[in-house]
Amino acid sequence: MLIGKLSLLKKEIQKVIVGQDVVIEEMLIALMAGGHCLLEGVPGLAKTLMVRTMSQALDLSFRRIQFTPDLMPTDILGTEILEEDHVTGKRFFKFNKGPIFANIILADEINRTPPKTQSALLEAMQEFEVTYGGQTYPLDKPFFILATQNPIEQAGTYPLPEAQLDRFLLYVKIGYPSAAEEVNVLKSTTGSKKANVQAVIGSEDIKQLQALVREVTISDDLVTYVAEIIRATRPDTTSYNYVKQWVRWGAGPRAGQALILTAKARALFLGRYAVVPDDIKTMAYPVLRHRILMNFKAEAENVSSDRVTEELIKVIPRPSWK
Image (cartoon, rainbow, N blue to C red; front, side):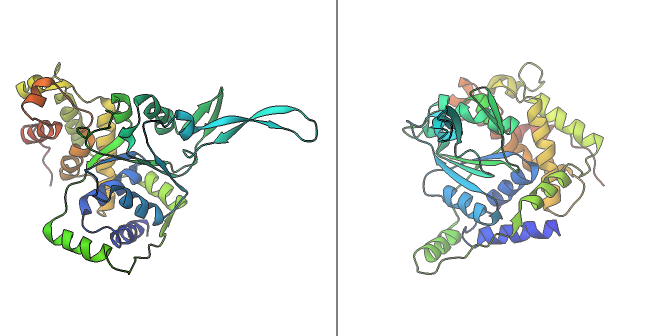
């Protein structure tokens, strides 16, 4: 029943979004695994529309935060305001909750704000709570941040701090549509007809899905395989020369946790209750993309973290699977 609702959810999103099947699936996998998702692509690829459409298909509270260079942490978290009790005349401070207090947060163009403001999200993304003025306020669950960003080479952008990047379960890159998809986009967006997106899945369903993901089976051999991939990304422990030449910092244990969880979520998304090697191979790219930091030599040679992941997957022996 729950798996069927996932298919309905994808169909609702596809009423508005043409193509981008892999991107939609990875967004849903991140939601199922209980993590956050970072979407990157040049302007005009419907990143914001994709997130907004997904929020419409989910029966959850939704807030959009437009990140700008002058955005302050209090614009995200909230602030204390001075109020007066009209009966006693006493004054007191009351915390006025910011837009972070919702189930789904669209952090639009997150890399257009300085690191100081970006860091305001760290506690919320990891501990699912906000601390202000010595008081801790829990966030409603499920809590899911979908952030969009333009490529860092574009003007007016700031690099996300490594600690911020690591909080995102998946780093999804959005490419240009195919020729046929682009024609469909032009047809569907320039007429008078608009798609009506229905909410097909609610809060309790998502909580059940997230609990079910953790029940998906993964063999000890595949857990060892994940650990070998993660350890091979670290220049100080790897046996692969190209990692030593190109990588400044490798992935940490959190990357292994993310890879196993998203592999389980992908298996469940495809109707399986056990992880297979292909789940790990597929999810390794969005999981490691932002957790392998390349050095200057790699940048000079135009070598990306995806290239490192690809090479490691080629050479590290996969467990036999019957």
